[in-house]
Amino acid sequence: MNQTTANAAALALVGALALQLAACGTAQQSAPGQASTQPEPVTLTMSWWGDDARTETYQQAIQAFEAKLQYITVETIYGTTADEDQTADVMQVDWTWPGQNADQFVDLNEYSDVIDLEQFSQSALDACTVDGALLAVPMSVTGRIFYWNTCIFEQAGIDAPKTYEELLTAGNTFREVLGEEYYPLAMDAAARMNLMVSYLESTTGKAWVVDRQLQYSADEIKTGLEFLQALEENHVMPTLAAQQTNGTLDQPPMWQNGQYAGTFAWDADAETYRSALKNASGFLVGDEIAFGGQANGGFSKVYLALAINSSCQHPKEAAILVNFLLNEDMGASIMGTACGLPDSVTGRAAATAAGLVNPLVVEANNRMMAFVDFPLDPTFESPALATVPDGLYAAVLTACSNGELTTTQAAEQLAEGITAMLDRTVAE
Image 1 (spheres, rainbow, N blue to C red):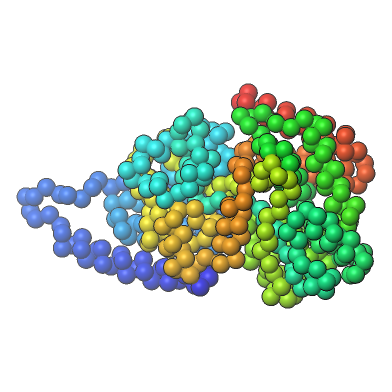
Image 2 (image 1 turned 45 degrees about the vertical axis):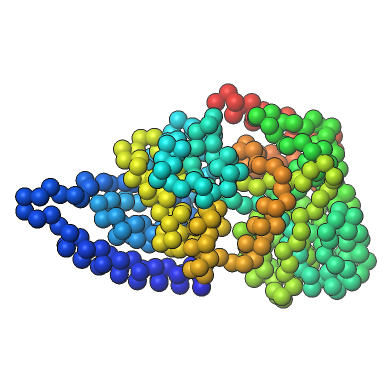
């Protein structure tokens, strides 16, 4: 069942529930002279951003919530970008917001009797915690993993790679057997930066950033850039200039026809990449590659979270809404995967029972989570660093890939730019 079909079923359920509760309410009205047991009416506001499908899902889940708790009204504020509204009582937030705006959010540890926090992974809760205060509840956790088109690897006479050595060998085999236009791997600058950090963490055992301090010198970063350079030189992936000339990776024709036979992408995008292939039966969720023996490099991150604004006049009722959407069967079965694969155990079970969880996404998420050793530092995805094509990563990696910067120069620019961003974050 897809999200649209499930939403239609949810509407019918909401309507039936509303009628049932209305009837119960009539029967339970206080007799003349008796004190009313109905709570005082409460109005909450809730904001989110996203596409039409996400908005429709939220609206239907909120209708179910209002039908269940008829004394609470939820007014909604939504748009297509993250900065549409930051004043609502309950807010969908990017996971980096709590760390940047700690005073804006309620410590949800104070409402652990309302929100069942035991349903969430500790690592995800930790990512939403600032100075001991839980400032948001994770909706979903994501990370990058390899996807392969095994049909093309079979044409080359080899298996999809599981080690760095196999990856390097695959590049030369593709060139010799299939031709110059075929590559076993391709990815944009943002993914290359993720892959480079994964390589460095694997070979050194050090996290990229700890306590807002970059843990790598320019010389160490140079080693990571030389790793990316080796992938290009061994025909594992094209230069960024060649890749840009040939269009974006997740659109035809390069991925669709198999000229790019692999990528390093978010686990949530598994179905997007599979369905784009001409022969989708060849799609494979690959293993993470251990580039070194010091650690399992790479990181996971909270994709989206829900937070309660410190200005909220009814924080307990807001917490009830959060728990309904993420943990309760009725709410979670409507929300499905509209905000990513649920981190909540009960939420994921409800979404799965409703037929809203793609097994490929679960497989990709499970493989990624079982491997990576490190959380993602919030600053890593700051727009000034991570935006494609104008952020620091894209600018430096593209210039290095094109030969406009040496690996030494590129490493120095990355180290200086990242350190400056971390210093600004600390100062703020």
